[in-house]
Length: 328
Image (cartoon, rainbow, N blue to C red; front, side):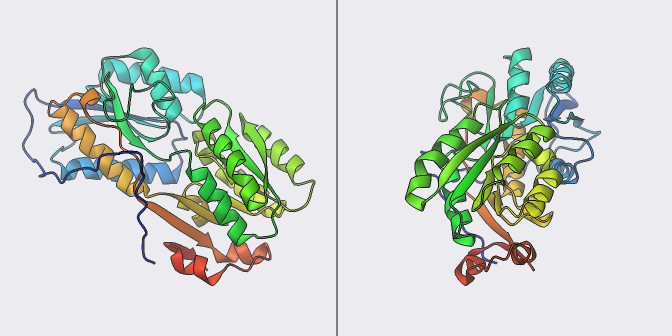
């Protein structure tokens, strides 16, 4: 399917083409830390980290020769995340952080070691950077979503399930940036004939209780905000959507590959390439605070027709034609 590009209108700079550099920088082997708030056995993020390492290799960073990479998968447990952050800060020249919680705990440990984030959002509102164009400090990176995307989630969910009147926004209570998705959803919902229910959760048990309670009334569906918790709990979330007969929209296409109905989100492989380019620039001497925070520019739509059929939904042909990935 043809991939569509979405250009964010908030003044984000685009990445300029760069010449790959194969020479070893001065100072011998450099040290890169990678902090991921998902379980070590999560196959999706294992794949994304592997992509990230390959992208670095294409930029001339050979592990064992001029680069050492230390990867920490912690799961969503905040204490495990803090312990891993402390270790990486002590050992790294630069750290790649995946998710808002990972950046937050790293900033509790250091304001000098450069941090490049991806799969995070609202970096200004979260206090990570001073501004997008001029981050200052030791943090920069790539947003996965801007809050306005929540309006698009509701539009797509209503298009694929026009009978809906109620939508729950499932989000992680420990990520302040997730509240921005809720606020946008609440503002957009009336124009679509929807009401929005705040479904804040802290763990898998919360997810079970909140969605089961919401499903007690008819004409409901839900949208899932991006968070390590919701990513790690995706088998439970997708299973609940199936059992409770709730149409749901997800932030990443891998939810659809695992049986979810529909997803609209960023191109994760492009995000990894961009993050690798920033790590490369920092290891060659650029200050993190001098590199602008980038907004997402490429989005992808995925639909699972098998799941739609099980829910009794007839997917509009126009929606299928516009999708980047269709599972039949």
